[in-house]
Image 1 (cartoon, helix red, strand yellow):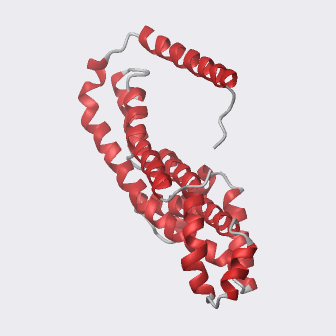
Image 2 (image 1 turned 30 degrees about the vertical axis):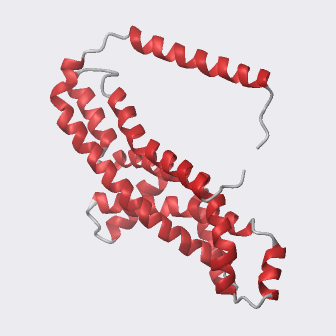
Image 3 (image 1 turned 90 degrees about the horizontal axis):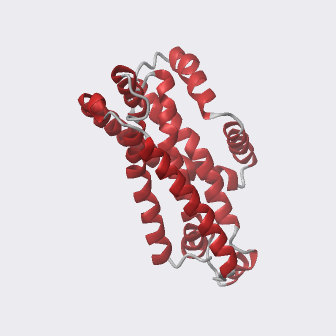
Length: 247
């Protein structure tokens, strides 16, 4: 991997270090009243647990849905390919907040779907799965045509080509983007506050309101989301090295 020049690195370091130092200075200037929010720590922990559960289930379902959409987009059956593509473009062009509101107050209401948590899991899975489908599709299509022809020349079936040649390369290439999407899914779960799902952000907002505080609840909020997203990035880095990710 080629490195950038030292001067450029120093400039980036100076900008980031200056910004971080200023942020720390601003935070330290504030006179925090931790005693006011202390009675609500159990509520914050409960909200964090709800966010963890929703994110974990939605992450698994989004992968499955993303794989399904990827197969649909790469299918030789034209109706399946067209329908999958239309769905992907529709969801990618619509804000998640809009999908949550329309989905809950229109679709879920028509289906008598009253459980807000399961609905939240469903809408997050469908939304994130769409973006994962694009990531997976791009990973598959990065495999050069010559490798497909070589596999065909040595007598491999399409299924064997995918298993032994395409997927090993595609998985390595989609890891960084997939990790970013998984982190986005966790952060996007905060939007479920609009339908009163008792997740982390809702509990923090209520604690701040009840304790008459401003920033005290948002610091554990940031720490709580970092506790969920950082392990994903570390795991992604580990898998990149293990699978020999190609820079």
